[in-house]
Length: 343
Ligand code: PHE
Image (tube, rainbow, N blue to C red; front, top):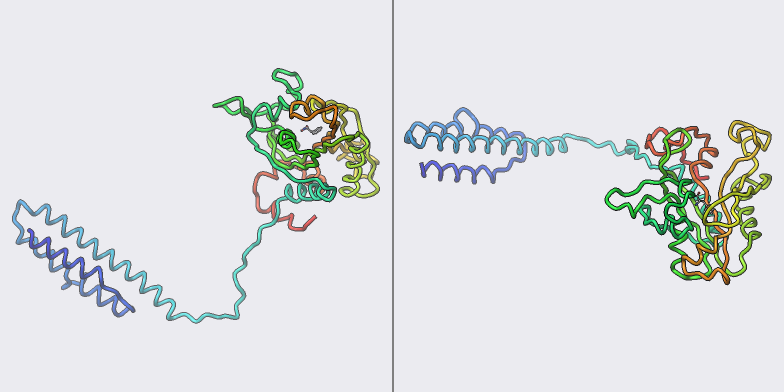
């Protein structure tokens, strides 16, 4: 039995080091090891000399050995195959290369970059913040105390293990985080993804993207807010577009307004995009509420500021004629590859 074991080990070592350079050597290997008069057959024959009580163990060993050699043969064959292919192949260097499709920017990214770059030209600096946020930075500091009915305007998703954390409903959390740093003046633009507990449909989704802006300094007035947004609208929608502000309510700004632009599809005459009103709502804005400044350690008697916030999907849908907001997140290449041009 021991003798048989030693013999098998020696054969394994020998077979392990074998190598073949071509098909002929491969065939020689097969004949030597697996042929009808080959080593595997021969050693199998030794079973008859094994004592009955050892037969089972010997059978196992021999079987293992056979599998080992067969595997080695398969490996050598694969290698020899590759070598053979290379040897037999002539490469036509004049053929064109394989097409490597280059990706394109997502329409939401294109629109975000466009909005952000207009404000960057006015000296606004980009900052980002966490999408999983604590209650204070998303609501509390923004003058939205717990149980305040205004929280209903932005129903969100809470984190089950710890409801003190939630998915931010707006990028206003970045405003708070920037103000908390205490470095003034602030002129910032804050793009990012936000979440709301809304029924998913062609017009609304449970997540979307926003750009918010913040300007805090001494003597900032509503006139500064209007002038900044006028500039934005002219750059974004063209010189002929008209602007109007409607009084509105946000807990974190006072006074607050909603800004509309004259419909850039129909020129203000009334169409399905503006729902025959001639106006399209594009953002919310206002003067930062003194409570918000105090919450962030900024003296409201010395400093004032304005803030604004807008969605990205809606203007992108208008710009590209996309009729379903869900398309943005379905990752369908047929949809995504249509937006290769820079805007
Ligand atoms: N955070 C508001 C929203 O998401 C937008 C906004 C920002 C309004 C700043 C006014 C001032 O609805």
